[in-house]
Length: 259
Image (cartoon, rainbow, N blue to C red; front, side, top):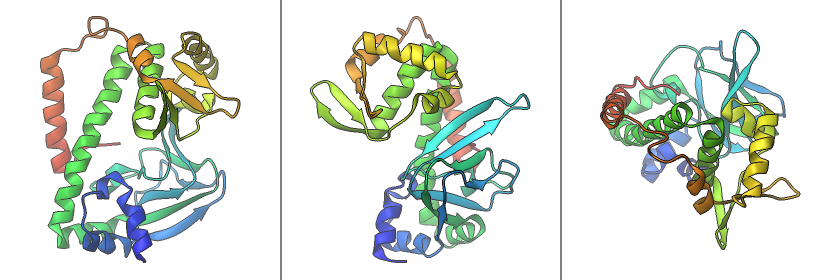
């Protein structure tokens, strides 16, 4: 693998604090794989064998209930590896992964990576620190899912996407660098497309969101935050949250977290 590969790996959050030598060791394990639109990287019933690092294109991660209802967990763009459980747990993949467009991913063999971690404890420690932050992010998503209405969840999702994929400022507006259809937003929320259409229309009416003719999304962070429920409307037991976060931190260190 070349130095260009190590530069690509550094774009993935778990690897950002690694040295060039540590990145090079991981790069040696990576295999480049190409997928056409509609190709499956793996199925939920498959045994975990690789962690995937998208370099090009978008991959949808989703599960399906017995009744046929789908729930999207993540739309993985370049820089968002999956599944995080592949680093430390065995078993089956927690969801299906399908390419939404032509995609290129680095496939990192789990067993080879485990041997690398055993030989380089510093890599293990640095990655675990970053995954602890991922656990806190997942808790915030769970809190939004638990305490907000569907509209509040959409606002929270747009704010998170702006934080992760926002690019450029035009006055109070920020544009999402990752284009999302209403159907993809609905999948992330577990809501119908019609519901998302209705809520987006309301947000546009309140001048909190702008939708371009090309489907691009611009958001006013200030106005969106002003539309979120107040603390009294979405109250959380502070002590309970503290205990949950402490448990998650411990879980992350021992390798017991899931995504």
